[in-house]
Image (cartoon, rainbow, N blue to C red; front, side):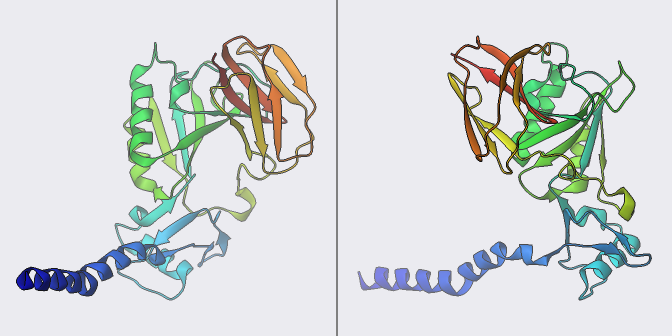
Length: 274
């Protein structure tokens, strides 16, 4: 019994002295991240939406901007150290997402579940696997298509987590009919473009699928009318938006099916399922 007790004590001491410090170290690895803000040689500004991993870089510096510049231009793994949430532009050579027509300046949000699974099952399966591996994400497109009419569709991708930019770029490029570009390069200050500028994308709806009521969550007060349409663009409901962050909508008169909710230039897809 005494020997067993000593073994337990020894195991506890080993865990405290050796194992726990390793666990703590694993939790603080993100302290290596820095946020580059400008391009030192000429003062061009970044969009500041990505982070750079400075752990064990070849050219170290106390300045985040300098360490980014030195390693991006002098080492081969510079781009592999960039983490982002929404710096991917994905365009498909086909109309993989069946979407209704809306006027220009409309933002439409979709996920892998909205892919045309009859004609493009391989695209749907590939996007589903990316979500399973890397976490929740959404794809937002500016309507109408950025490409020529009748060709493809272009989306910006937004993830909940910071991910390695080049790694995701390669994943999307491996999808049939898909191409991807990772935007975390230097940007001219006059060309900085973000969906949060001039567009209110902070609108969420729940539950989805819905039954009799739909809840709209707005980060900012939005005075635009709430418009619900069919997939063909027919306006079915027009509701005045209140000044609250959450608004409850009665959708009991809508038949089971797919609908679009629009507030201003933001469009969200939802399903009625009873």
